[in-house]
Amino acid sequence: MTKALETQGLRKSFGGVLVIDDLSISVDQGEALGIVGPNGAGKTTWFNLITGAVHADGGKVLFQGKDITGLSRHERCRQGIGRTFQIPKPFSGMTVFENVLVGATHGRRMRERASYGHCVEILEMTGLHDKVNVLAGSLTLLDRKRLELARALATDPSVLLLDEIAGGLTEAEVQELIEEIRKLQATGITIVWIEHIVHALLALVNRITVIQFGRKLCEGDPREVMSSQEVQACYMGGTLA
Amino acid sequence: MDWLNQGVQGILLGGHFALFAVGLALVFGTMRLVNLAHGDLTIVPAYVALLMINAIHFSPFYSIPITMAIMFVVGYLLQRGLLNRVVQSGDVVGVILTFGISIVIQNALLLGFTADNERLKAGTIDSLSIRINENLAIGWLPLIIFLVALVVIIGLQLFLNRTKMGRAFRAVSDDQEAARLMGINTKHIWAMAMGVALVIVAIGGVMRGIRTTFDPSFGSLSLIYAFEAVIIGGMGSGWGTLLGGIILGLSQTLGARAFGPPWSILTGHVVFLIILALRPQGLLAKTVTS
Image (cartoon, rainbow over all chains, first blue to last red; front, side, top):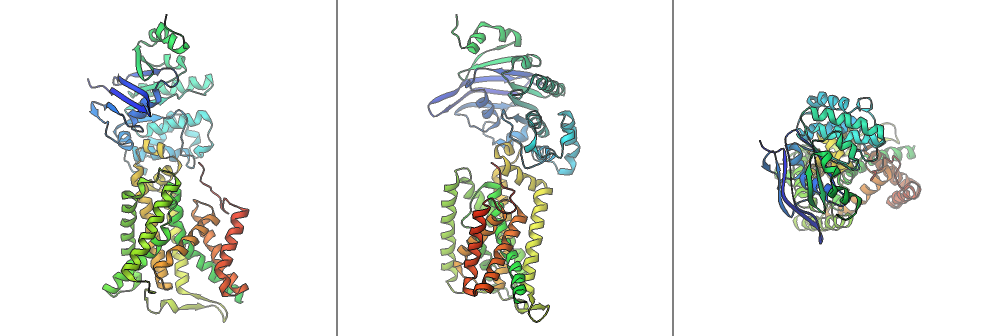
């Protein structure tokens, strides 16, 4: 079976700093993969390489088995890659509904009228249905994060990249968000989730990959990985015994 | 009564200014590009129409749709081929490049058409007017230009607020990076924005060619009026631009009435400076937030 998403030997440096060093990670169809690693490990850069915001110095990005390394950002979106930002970037001068509508019409290349139903469904699923006419710039943090999710979903992705979507939320809000993501997972969307809030990841993902210094440190069963000595050491900043 | 007449003329003139300013505001709004070639681009359509009229003698009004189509293509290609390269390089690079384009256009027009005054002859329409009373007469042409400006601004607002492409313009204006993730090709959208801006410029440019004489040096003054109208009104708002145009038009005609015709343009600039000092964000500030 073809992998939903795969990066092969990706390399990227900014100036003299090697940020991604021969990074090969693959994600199965319908899998939920958690990505952890200390700050500056290259997690977000890896996402940027997948969406095309940053171009790789070497290596390949494969999506559903196709090489998409040369495609631009909007083309990758139309192929089916969705992404949320760590710091939400709503279209602040537009309403919540319009934000989602833009994703639905441009990401799926549909007419506005034809995509209304799809938008309403997504807004209900992400709990934004009572705020459709609110300007996105005036939303609370939780709602901005939900809007990030809703907007990404509107483009009808088969792979969804979540960048620290639980960061900055209260514990109760994190629980709500986990429930919403669980519903998405049930629809068959492949999820790749960067997160520092480990218990949120453990509640949902099938597998965890740890990145350190732009390389893959280890991967495997979520609980085993997180309790391994190597990972504890890299998180606590200590040296390996 | 003379004041009233000058006031009415000022408002109509304001519509004319707004017609040029809207395109400048649209381009700035969607891509934060300060287009110093905008003024020169407002005279290009008049020359395009002139060529057509000289070749096949028809009314300049008929040349408007064709000129609009030509200017759309010019705008799209100019943006896609050249200006897109500088959109993300910061303000200064864009200013330098468009300044260069402005010089190229002016000199190309001088070479092609000489510095002579030209005019698009539209028969008797430019002298017809509606007589309200012995002191007040409204010229048909200024009235038509004002109404066209109104229709263009309403149309642009509807386009931006109600259509798929319009929403893409606004999305790109709000956040380019997020827009790309939504499947929007920002390069295409910027080019469309420049195309639409020049379509509007084409209408205004041909109308002005019918109303007054023009020569290749006209661009710089148009640019200043357009900037003043946009800034008075508040960046990024269509209605603000119309209001800005009207205030500028009124200042010029009333200034002429109060201090004599030679003071008309200066009065306009002074009023602009006063507004800029007192309310730098513009009167209808729907300011572009970062």
